Length: 253
Length: 308
Image (cartoon, rainbow over all chains, first blue to last red; front, side, top):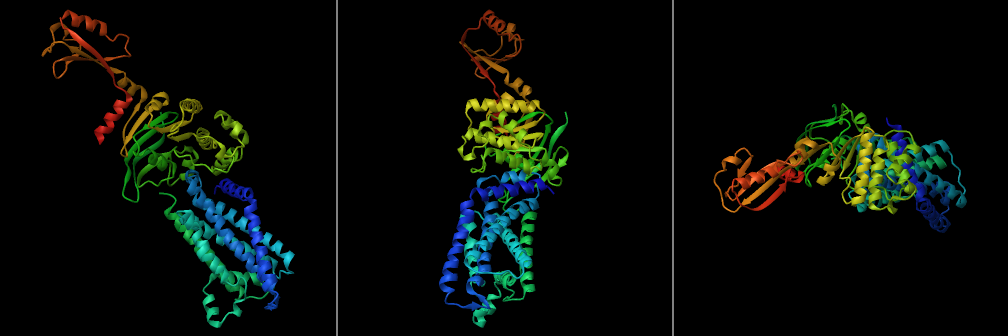
């Protein structure tokens, strides 16, 4: 294992994050604050409590998940797509590193960025609502797992994408709708039974539910199922990445 | 001489069925400068890419320092520095960071003193903290070289290092290559500037349509290039050489209107004075003289034409 190479990729990617700190950090914080204002204050004042939690606090885990999933995906996909686009990928291919080290470097950096943004949003939310975290370790674990698994997904998208449009396609058309429909801003128990059953096919439901459990000790689905779902999703992403590694798909001719 | 890169029966076909390399055999000797000459699309870049790990060989083997580039890729690639043909650089990074990154990828600990020295050698030191996008094309090309040298490789591949580079910079680049060779680095460069191969290479390989046509010492090639042909136009055609000219190595041109004499410009005596005197003594009247020098370009063009 070439640890020095992993560290180099990680540092190089993190440098990009800090170079563009304004857009990296300010925009998610700003948009989250807007969600708080619109959903928490305006709509939340009409909704009393959801599952015993004030609506303003109830949406915090969903908001963090929404941002973390999109950030992890877009950072990782951009991270590996950009070298492909500008041609610097030659360096990764001709260095004494295996694909595994490349994945750890890029996915690690993208996950770190998303985690960082997630924690900043959590800190921001303390200014708006009063929240307590029932299971802090489980909360951090869910957050880290989500960051890593969606960064893995982003990495796959970045390898697959042939242009910038495709890079945006999956986050925009798949992830955002799944997150919005995954109970970010509501409890799925608020839906009619038919929709509750359909929603169970949305993997994001399990992630948000598990994450919300870590905050409020209440969940739409049992925590064990949430953990299993995120584990399964991570395993699927790893499987695809392993296949890319074996075949050199879209990287090595 | 021991070979440091050994290519055996290397074939490379792309998904569309195009065969870019059709059975290349090549031994690169330790410490030499090998220039690979070939027209566009001959397979120069594919050959380099396959040795360096960017492309996967369809069949055949490539060993670098005795290590197979597929099964023992880490050991093989550790020895190699690659300067690609295209200027592929992260535009928003600084020169120093991007060179540091390259060194890190090769698993080497940070060594800014070494990188500073490399940047100085390449006249880039005053740009160490500049963003890549602020540099001129020639500087960017040197950044690519700095990146390739950052991990102290023992073999350096330069793919068209002086394409689109002005004359002065080209000479600087040749100096850099000469210095590297002096420090023991084996250098393989591709070019389609014949004078570049003449100026710096120890051996010249000619590649066309995915095959290596010849690999020869530059001196041997120059020997062939040193041959000159003198054509003597005669006022009256002849069908037979006069007796006194029989052992002069002359040929009668097809139409009998001229005599042809091949000679070596490098020998102390070309024998031209004596030949002209003999011609006069034999009573032959000359109307014109013409000389032609065969160049590496002629050899190259002939070879490439023969195979196509």
